[in-house]
Amino acid sequence: MGCGRGRVAHHVARLTGGNVSGFNIDQRQIDHAIQYAAATNMSERLAFRVDDFHQPFPYPNNTFDGSYDMQAIWGFTKRRDLDFASSEIYRTLKPGARFFSNTYALTSAFDAENPHHAHLHSLFLPTLAASQSNYAHDIVASLTRVGFTVLWSRPSVAPAWPLTDQKTTVIRLLHRFVSVLSSLGLVPSTWDTDFSNLLMGGVAWHDAEKAKLADLCWQIVVQK
View (cartoon, helix red, strand yellow):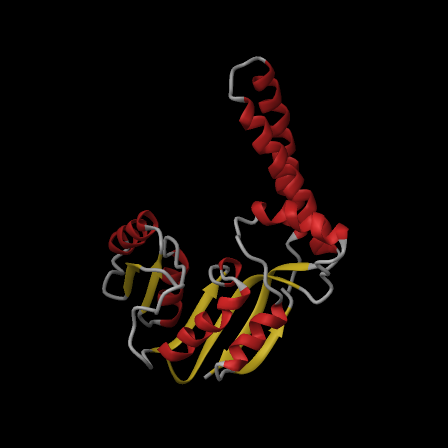
């Protein structure tokens, strides 16, 4: 679900020796996935198509031996729609199959009524290129409601904020360069604004994750 350009699917197919199907809403990314599969002689084991996980999944009941989500579903699904996505994952898996999710999620420490938490959230969410924020426990509750047994739900093994710090350093240097170009009229002033927002978002994510308000790679494994 939300397979992007199919690189993870390609790795999973090679790692497991199995066949992997994926779908994504962006035709361009699917085109890239199909082309890469062909270029690496994996077309017979990789199947990609355009579709939307907010709609019924394009597969029959009890199709797959396993499935996974890499930061594609829950960051783009409203809380009221969690059960629909969960039920479609459940429907398309065979009995005994497992679903793994590596996802951006809020932790129970995040308080939407806390002004500081809310401010951080308003800054970092656009930086993550996500449209929705769901608590990890709400995602797990949804998966449980549709029939899954939860094997584990846990924070990421390592924090993402050190990597964010490295990127922030690079973005800060680029921002200074763009600011100079913008002041000279060599690039649109919107570039300066965009880099400024990206910088603030990166710093906000650092603060939020370090305070354990959110996790970029929360891990969930459930079984049908």
